Length: 623
Image (cartoon, rainbow, N blue to C red; front, top):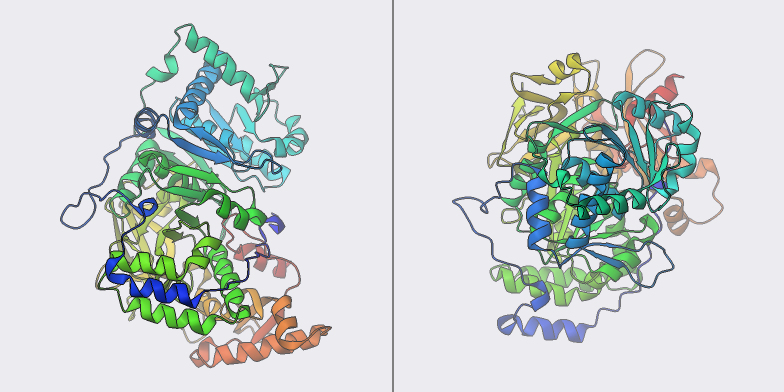
């Protein structure tokens, strides 16, 4: 276990907003005569009776072959391999195809790894994409691993997966050195961005690729001819374990291909789009929706250099879509709005939102007008953003509404690693801020044993559902019953079929009188308090063995300093937070009110999608 200090959201800096009233009025006056800018044009999708006509892919290799041939000369990956470089390197679909074919051939003919599990560990980088697709298009098994795991956990995952090779980034070299001697079963340690020839168990990935190209030049095309069984076990992903120990999730080609098909029915992504990659690729959310989906339509992917470079990288690469987790979106929202307030333009922005919303009857024109009126906000996000997608945890609906109000399509998704991952998604043509979307076209969702409010455990039946848990038949049978996956999430469906997630089964606090309290509901309210940076609500036993609602809070010291003064004592900080909590309590029924406050000075232990590991935090208290 570890604390993800490097996933701490950095202090984003946006330029001071000027917001020229003259330009705004000029834009509003031209509502009737506006024409959409060519850079924002997108191919009109085909419709069936309800949705866009979806794709019908059966395997990822089918997607790879089609896209790398059809879009050969288009840019696929943009990456700045050295921060000192002035511009991002642009890599075409053609080069990507050649490198994948060569790596697959080299792994087989040079290293004898055909059909073997291979670990992939490292930051988001070109060779991660190449390695992952190579395994999906070959007879091997990809095992993406969280790069933030400590050495002992990395070693454990390698053993559990029965991998025979490890592909790792240069930044993980020291960690690999620490575990290498304990892993005699690993035949090869393959280093990214290295041309090192085979030296014992060490080899550079570029050397393997170059050797693969030599084999291909000799007429060896075994890799290209490999036929993929859609049902074959192809990806092994160990869950982050926010509520329990990590399990190995087995995913097949059908699971991933059906994810792409399902999303294509709800979202009209095209080759003109560019996705911004900031979430870790070992997570199915990013590797499927942030990688396989854009590849399927011929779009491009801009690889963020790291969290502290988000703002400059957005401006350099001009993405049209940002796929993120709520914590990241919330922080971007807060920083932008704090800057608007500092620029003394907050009242003006609110007025412009109201005025531009009056033109909703002219939706296509309305979006263009919003782009012009809020151009400085758009420029701070790269200038071309049209989608912001949130998933992995609930988000404040007010933030989603604000994003929609300035003209950006705000989508929410829901799913788990076990559903590869998307089970529900907001259709872009039928948005409902606050919900987790509608079940995707290949999935059914129902609520098990709903209470008087319609809330119960979310059960999922889907073509994207995993094959099962790796070497854990008991856990598989417990999770999947009669074809329905028991998600562990609590939620309800509204009368239009939209899903709302209200909590986790294992997080639920059951009071002495049988009342169920979902901490996420209270945490959402606490998240609106400027003086609170992060929080976790849970049931704590008092001396009488009764549960009281308790909150662990990390204070936002910058905001406290700004609003309450400097050089405050710990007791004064506590009192400031407690006064804010009392205000929140007034919004809650009495049995949900927070009775206990704990100020936390270190970071919460988190998963790489920035969800707090509740069980780990509570275990600390027990110890």
